[in-house]
Image (cartoon, rainbow, N blue to C red; front, side, top):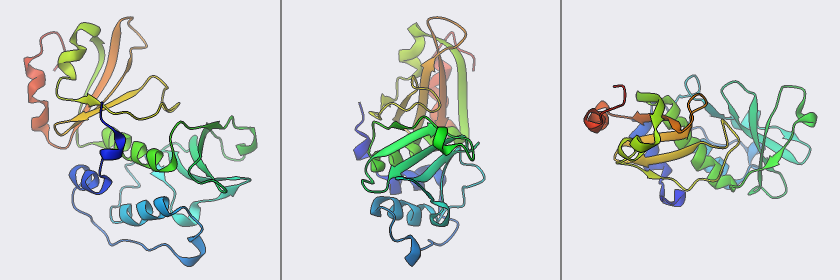
Length: 212
C-alpha cells in the first residue's frame, strides 16, 4: 500500500504533465483568505494550462466562492460534483452532487480526507483520466487482476463518492490505474491503465485472456 503522503506533487506534475507552459500566477491580496495549502497548489499548478482537458478542475482564486460556511474549490468537468472546504476549519472538506442554483438542496457529506489529501487525490486521479496513453478493460476476470496490476500498488486514498465509492487507484513503474467492479459481468472488473510513456504497457502483452 502506498501512503499518499509520500507522493511529491511537484515531481508528479512534471512526470505526468511535462514541462510547464506558463508562468506562475500569484495569489492576489483579496484571495489571501484561502488556506495556505490550497494557495500553494494553485500557484504551482498555474504554470500548466490544463483547464480544457482536466476532468477534475480546481477553481481559480477569483472563482472560489463562499456558500454559507463552505467555499467551493474543486469540481468535475461537468460541474455537477463539487468539493468545498469549511471556511472556519479548512482542513474539513465536504463534497456533493450539485446543480447550479441548487446548492442549498445538495446532500453535502464530509469527505474522509483532509484538504491536503483531497488535493493530492484529485491531482493523481485527474492524471489517470487524462494521460496521453491509456488501456481500458471493461471485463477483467478476477483471476487475471494480479497479472494486470502486477507492477502497481494500491494507493491509500480515502473513499470518494465520485465517480463511484468502489473505485480504487493504483500506481507504480510509470503507471496509474483505477479498478472497480464490472457493472455488467459478476466476478469481473473494469480497469483503466494510464501511462506517460506507451512502453509502460509492454508487460500486458504477456497476459493471455485479455484484449490488447
